[in-house]
Amino acid sequence: MLINDRESRQLMPFKYPWAWDEFKNLCKNHWLPQEISMAQDISQWKTPDLLSEDERHLVKKILSFFANTDVLVGDNILMALYAHVTNPEVRQYLCGQAFQESIHSWSYAHIVESLSMDQNEVFGEFQKVGIIKEKHDFQEQFSNGVLRSDFSTETPEGKATYLRNMCAYYLGMEGMQFYSAFVLLLNFKRRNLLTGTAEQLEYIVRDESLHCRFGTRLINQFIDENKEIWTDEVKESVRQNIATVVEMEDAFVSDCMRGGNITGMSREDFQTYIRYIADRRLEAVGLDPLYDENTTPFPWMNEIMDLPKEKNFFETRVTEYQAGMALDWN
Ligand SMILES: [Fe+2]
Ligand SMILES: [Fe+2]
Image (cartoon, rainbow, N blue to C red; front, side):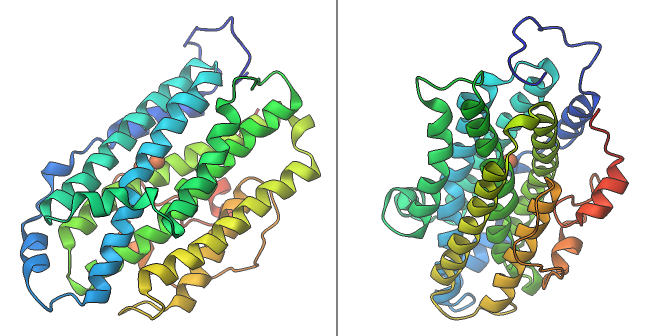
């Protein structure tokens, strides 16, 4: 049992060998932000007119979103998820993931520091009004549901709340909100701009791709063990939460792009992309897609993320994922 098995602190033999394998994969991806040179980025950021004011606005907006979001994800793992998981190998993974979220926060801090950005401007954005605050507030409601003093995973309502939390973080946040911001920022690399920042992001994308894969397996395992709570009502609420994320991402991109387009990327392409991603996330947990969007407008995301250690899980269609990963939930 993933939860409510208070007797078991015994790691081996593993009850969920896939979770142990995911933990070992996660540990292979160790990296540090300072290993990546930011010299060219510093020089490009200082050069007048190399990046337009709109492009600088976009870079700062995205970093503002990321700056505190990994803290939010780390907090949710440690304070909400971890507190209720009783299986040792899954706990082991969550410890590793929380550590990686700290590395990601360090990476964003390192970019902001390297480019001499106003730290209060970038890191304070989430507290202000606007779409970044809206995105954080939306996410926090799922943490708060689990952090309530009367929360319990013993009741069907509690289990459903816990499941909604996992879906909101692993599918909606790490699997969607992160990726829309990744695409916007990685686009600069294609023009040989901000390549150090892009390299930092490529390592983060690889980590997030694995977090998303683990989260999907965790959700499916949880559903398998608690079939009674996977009702039509809960399924629909998860789908609606994903639809809300899509709407917020449309607004976030408009805000980042100041209503126009940026080189190499139109708002329409982006809208297609986020819907394509939403459908993949829903399918991965056995839900019907919302948009029937089957083509990504950014196939270069696959190439840019084709780092040697792991293929990008995130962009992979669920049919390939199931065949490739030989999933066995029993
Ligand atoms: Fe992260
Ligand atoms: Fe993550």
